[in-house]
Amino acid sequence: MSKIFVEASLLNQDKYTGISTYLYNLLKNINADERKNFTLLTPFDKKAPDFDGTYNSINLGIKRRFGSIKWLYFGGLKINEYSPDVFWQPSFTLPKMISSKVKTLVTIHDLTPFYVKQDSPFTSIRQTLFRTFLYLPSIKYSLKRSNIIITISNSVAQEIENAFPFTANKIEIVTPAYDKNLFHNILDDHSIERFLNDHQIKNKFVLAMNMEHLRKNLDLLVDAFKNVKSDGILCVGGLLEDSQITFAKQKLGDRFKYLGYLKTEELPLAYSAASALIAPSRAEGFDMPPLEARACGTMVIASDIPVHREVLENEAEYFDSDDDKKLSHLIDEVLRSEKMFIESKIINKYDWKESA
Image 1 (cartoon, one colour):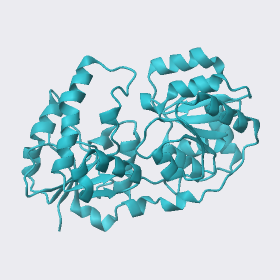
Image 2 (cartoon, helix red, strand yellow; image 1 turned 45 degrees about the vertical axis):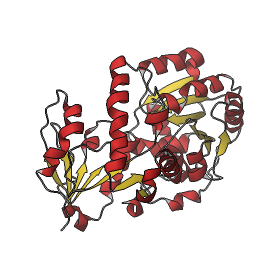
Image 3 (spheres, rainbow, N blue to C red; image 1 turned 120 degrees about the vertical axis):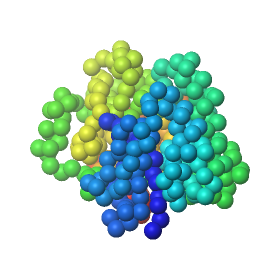
Image 4 (tube, helix red, strand yellow; image 1 turned 180 degrees about the horizontal axis):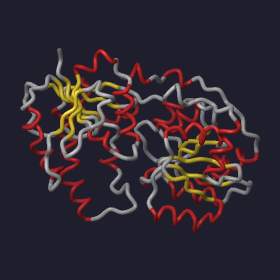
């Protein structure tokens, strides 16, 4: 029986982001009889959810004071005490000091930490120093130390190989997917009406999701929507900084609505009710909301970046990520038109069980 340890602290987040959603769905879709081989490990003061006891779960109890630094530099010593066969880090950075007897995997979701110098509206000197002298070197170490590098798209795999040629023979692609039981076109008018009433949406709207990071291009989306002539509003769901909400409201007034963090069960309602999903990011590893929107039959307007072309193929209207005029035109067109269900063919390529 193999002993596979998974660093699972991402599952302790109150509000899941793309990476934590990815990890959760992979673990959720591993066969029940195989879960006995896995141990979900958390470094700090809280055990990860164990999926109703179907996974082993342990906590290393590393104290929070300088905890991240302790984990990155010395976490391997703690791991070695349990003698796992395999250690999987699902988010960028392997801890150092792991015994050479332990096989390691690291998931690299994208290379934006290397070429996006500021990806948050607020970046302190402390955060900049952490990124420059600790985080980036730790990713480079992880790329070298890992026996297998997992990434989430062909586009990112090629970026990694180009930037770090020594990785060429150890990259494997495990794509995200969508929940087939959840994401489909909602035909129940009462459910849609309740969602619209709960969020006080009274107009046609286009939707954007998870726009907190600067590379997500919220500024361009707001500037583009300012020039949209058709009736309708811009709704944004997911995490946003207060400064971003203020900026959007100052530019758009009542034509902007922040929906907050949407519960998982609300997402198909939001996609089904929207006239289109807008995905304006300058860089992505995969970008799950456009795939989920297509599963709901909703039109997608996406920035013309490699991974959007890879995943969405011909099932999106594309614009250059700096072209607010083209984006305005596309939004204008969709708000003037009747909402249509557009069946997707690309979604059949993506399955959480196959990825798991």
